[in-house]
Length: 338
Image (tube, rainbow, N blue to C red; front, side):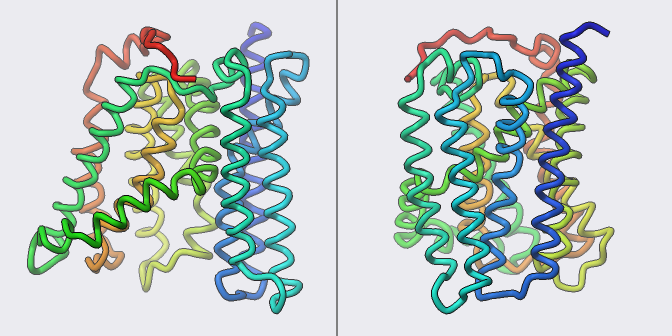
């Protein structure tokens, strides 16, 4: 085993240890801390930052001598986590003075500061450590395709669970237009959590898994690890009604593996981490708006419908053999935006 391979494996161990340990600590907090009004949601927010923190700490340890490490960006991220963690704890210690609204106000400001730090960072540092926007045409094509797929998935959900079928007026109306507009605006004050997850699972871990297990299997394993990372939230935070543990686990794995395949494929082609970041943001927020009012419940019917729609819409990219085989190592050379 050569030295580069040893470093890769060591960095994977560091990343996974930090990421899962932080998730476990937050899970314990959710289980035992009193459920203040909306206070638990702040812990969920912090967990989404965990993978990004895992990457940053790992890079600062493993590659500490590299002068191209974007330390300003990394330390801004760490400070943001520290500030939000303290604020989250204060919600429980002083519930009459500190509320979740204070937490999210700070997070909005922190998102803007973090974004500015990325914009101001040197181009060569952003390029090496995956922070730069690149391959503009292919990136926006993937994002547009994903938005179309979300609308198709909404149609399928309405057909399966809404007795009235797909009601265009319920989805395409003036109120929805305003909601989507504000969804775009609020991305800039809420992107850091999605960046945290994608910077960890897609930018950092995925290429390492692909080197060892191959392009397709590596992405699938990454999806499984991503799903396992959600386990504390699935059993301690999210409300699945009377669904049993097996249904919850199957649903989570299908969702994470299928989304991980499509997000991973998009990142593999574009080499642009902001593509899966935007996709993840849209998946969690636009899909919620589109499916609003449709009661799916959580049962084996939900799981099978999720398996059917996601397999067709997202996992079908596994069949594009040429791209997976070539892995498109730097084949796009479009002008970088900043």
